[in-house]
Length: 328
Image 1: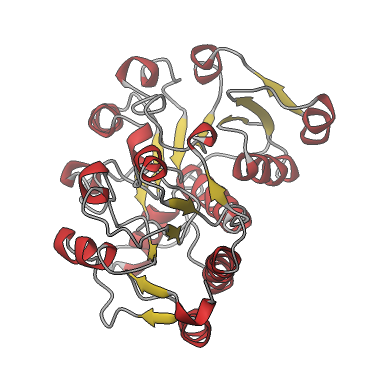
Image 2: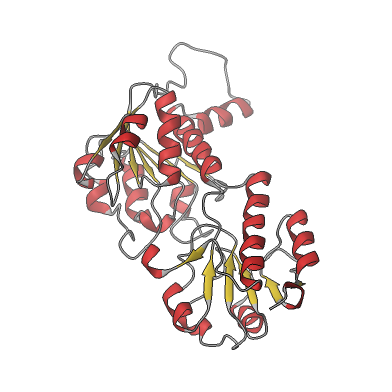
């Protein structure tokens, strides 16, 4: 199928350079405003496009896939995570799904370290004090935070991002611990100076900082539930840049309010952009608007991967970033 003839619908605004290149290569319908498509708009797009370029804000479940047209053969996801797409049902209907892995690794790892520093050094509180009229100047006991050198960092999920976090943490003098579905190869453990824990319960009870870097799957939903959160030390900090559903947000909020966990740095939330109001009120929680991968360079690289996947598919070949259910 010649690329110029392929009908491509893009569900969100993308960087201008990416949209321009898509327009040059394919018969593309771009989005004018940057709001998520409604279910009906998605169904309409899937009913007439050969390729749908979607994002994490587009929930494509079995019901919606049932309304797809026969011509829809590729869902090219702009992003690495595909938990918003029913990949198994798509495959059953002959629809391929691709993603953009590896692009956001370094950017997300940077945000993890930024959140660790921000929470342990009370940066959000410091900003509020400095911007208020009540700051009386420097004092020996004012705004005391904690030093991260020598602290134990537990990484939940040691994939690309987890390993990038480990490299940064090692440079800061932190002790790296991790839990993963599969243990890393010995040479990688040695490079990262990382200690493996087969038991997640045992690890979370011993670390000073816990970084969530695993994807959202049925097996990781509320992996950090109330019971497991209670295993953490009272002076521990939890950071999540992965998926909000991995943590029981209500339980975390209660424990932060009660001082049973010292602090949290969250870039993702269990209900998307609907953040628990009680969580917003907490001085020991730093909240970011899902900006872990938000660099211009990263977004352009994601777009380039989307284009390569579509172009390869249009030329009759397997997209290089094809997602299959066994990967999930």
